[in-house]
Image (cartoon, rainbow, N blue to C red; front, side, top):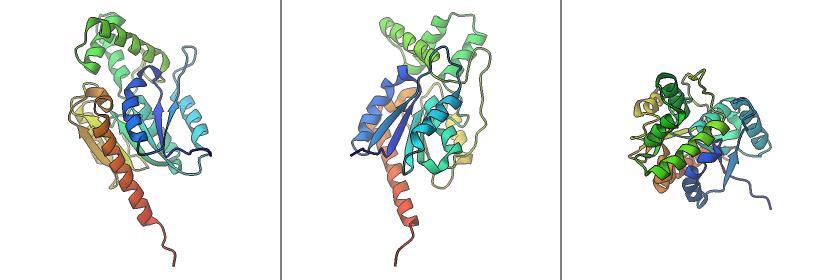
Length: 245
């Protein structure tokens, strides 16, 4: 019998997939979790619309809405999809996604490339420090190569020619926004910008630490918050069901 997932975790950055694994393993102990992945090659244009169409092809034959989860640009993809097809989404969980959902590490990288007279390696080494803290030189080199692969394979809308900004707006589905208080990529005020767009069923939550990949360093704490949100959404939907007499 085919198992239908209750949760679909989005990943559009294959080189950064490892930072989702701990959280997904924890969630999979309690829910049926599937991971949807997208990877573009260097000959393809960086276009989120392609990823949106492929995600829709994956979800359109499901017989029930799913909980979507996404970190960074994968969260942006989930938000754009929820705005197009809210009937297919039970809830949306965004990890490290600000009210301007296009603001990701690549946006900061390209901003620095445009204004600082430094090589790609130097800028990426600085990004490693902001993303992961101080590391040994060997690990810095490894993480620089990881970020280089993400620049080449993720459908980020940013480039040396243009840094994209998307206007804030509410999500048409139940929304949980999770972030870290010490994220040096998506700052606290950018997360708090969601406040004016939250519906009564939505929630915003901060992890005390962990940086930009807080869900990797605190998988249980983040996972429990997400599970509690899903449980509340499920209970609310039960109360909304008509009563048969």
